[in-house]
Image 1 (spheres, rainbow, N blue to C red):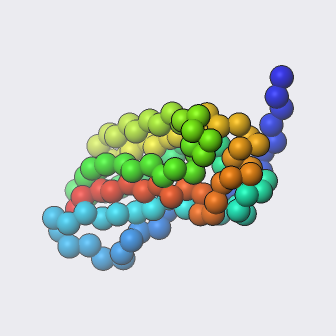
Image 2: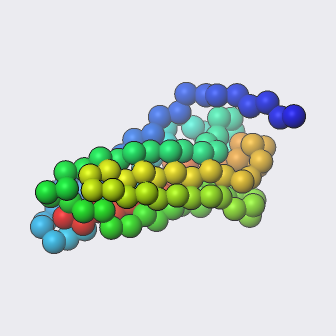
Length: 116
């Protein structure tokens, strides 16, 4: 039996630009903070609901990064869009030791794009 520990890690959303022209994509990046390179704590899973104003934006796609699949064990991803929210989640299948020893900051190089 493996016992895990919880550490305080913050996830935030950073837009690539503060302004977007109608008809062009708005790209945002999800960034993890409270982490250091190759050390505890690492990030093994996340589950986010991102809301947006559907009269201005529409969900388009998600691009997941590679920091939750470091040892080649894979990860499980799920994207569930609705009218004004998208749920984005990922679970690493790597061991906690692999994540602790190989994960680099910013841990979550994932991003998802919405179209204006």
